[in-house]
Amino acid sequence: MFAYKTSTDWTRNQNHEGIIYHDAFGNITDVTLEQFLAADSENTVEMFHAIKKMSDGIFEEEDADERRRSKKELPLYEWATEYATESLEEQLVERTAHEARKTYLRRRAELQSLLPEAMATLSENQRNRLLMHKVEGLTTREIAKRECVAQSAIVQSITGAEKKIQKFLRKRGFIS
Image (cartoon, rainbow, N blue to C red; front, side, top):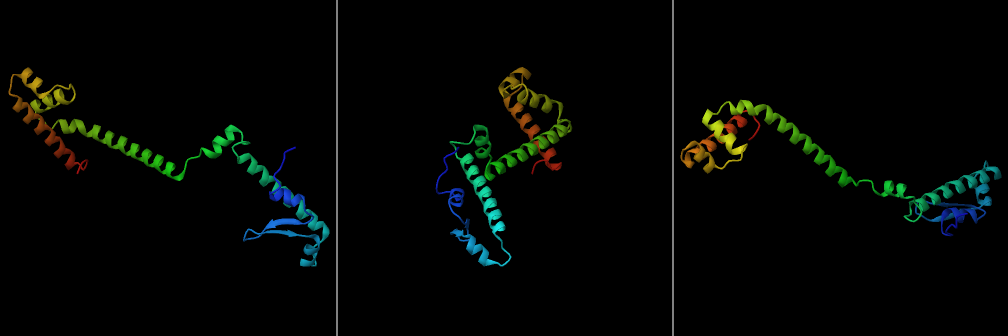
């Protein structure tokens, strides 16, 4: 048998002849059989004992719930479930991150679908130089050396290509 605290409502109710309850202000009241019968002419002794038995069950259940919720007596899997639930802030951050990820993936897919059309607006030199620089990772100096032209011509070509792509994406409403 469990050793119950003497300060719980369940033990108070068990140790008194009357029914223990809390009023709206948190005060503890002990209603005796005499008070119960005097309160209403239709009240009976059987009703009093039925209510006392019901309140004993309610208080015992509340006391057991309180014991289970204490870290010492709650089984680990129940404790983890009880106390590891996400706070409202955590749920909001997760939902926001999820929405941001969906937005990112959608915009990335849109950009990928526009990219061939955007690349088609470039001259052959701009397209080749931009791809060498962005995809192959070559520096402007390496591209200039490969094509036997001045580095400044490569920089101008790549800068011009980037501006054309930005203008194209701006017209499509992809960037502002």
